[in-house]
Length: 204
Length: 204
Image 1 (cartoon, rainbow over the protein chains, first blue to last red):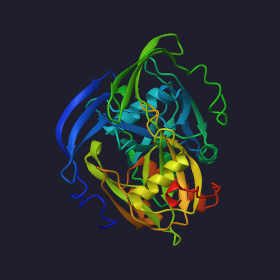
Image 2 (image 1 turned 90 degrees about the horizontal axis):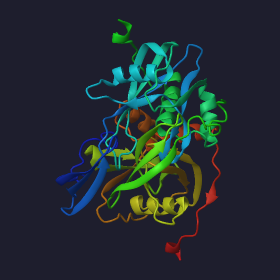
Image 3 (image 1 turned 180 degrees about the horizontal axis):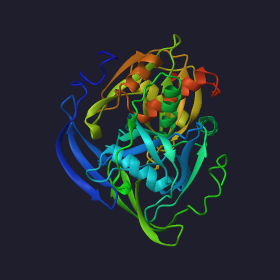
Image 4 (image 1 turned 45 degrees about the vertical axis):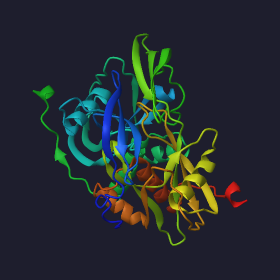
């Protein structure tokens, strides 16, 4: 096998679906249980969450500071420091979702956007992919949180976020990956292709 | 609020449990649905996976190369490049789990271990935390995969992983965070406290 061509040549690893069923459908989670054929011909079960996908925004202020949030996350019963993020609505493009979530959660609107990449945060048991978008040319406005959504918005620096991560106070995976992207982008190692903000119906 | 004290002072964000039930229990997934009280006194529902926790191992070879895997991940129906990882068995310490998973999946045993940190990969809908451990002083041996476990093991460099990530070929969140840790550790910014490998019953 080739380390530089990791997405191909996986026939000896592939699992195929024999039978499938939905075992739970709530307001948020859609849980599936599949019977699968393993590469050696034997069978096993796989259980996973079907997720619509999400976006995370890395909001860059003109002075180099970053916009982050502190939000209570019920499964872990505590607040987390995170970059703004949210799930895709049905039929929504990732960039439209990024524009919407940044405005709703923080009030900021950006004049330029760049797609950094995609991350998969729970490959063992979820289809979730999170697109990472950078936003700059930020103009402050009023946040418009969804009903039932409560969060603090504040600004910080990459140095402060790195110090928090080293102390174990910042553990959110998507946010840590946003920090990886900022580090490599600022060092000129990873490139971003900036585009003008899409025209928003809200502006009309 | 203080950006440097993010874990406290979250009374205005806190959600409390009113009612709870298990809505699915499979071979792997344990799914809960809770009724919660929001900070403004209203009620909503929360759905999430209860997870036993996991470890990821960053295996450092003496020449600076890294040991990684390619594994088929059924929810996304393709293979991913990842650092070795696995779930905690009941009562198992993270370090014992790291030693076991590294040996089972790759055959390597390490003479020194260091705990880098913790990450939470799906804070919106899972309790999962993944402890990140570095391993060095590696001695090769025979992998002992679980029944139904199929994966390729290969060695690579941080540069190669970073190039794959920039091209969108490496998207596994825990692995990207391992790369963040290697970068900061090699730069002397984030510290690791190395310890001798625990005595293993397998060696007795």
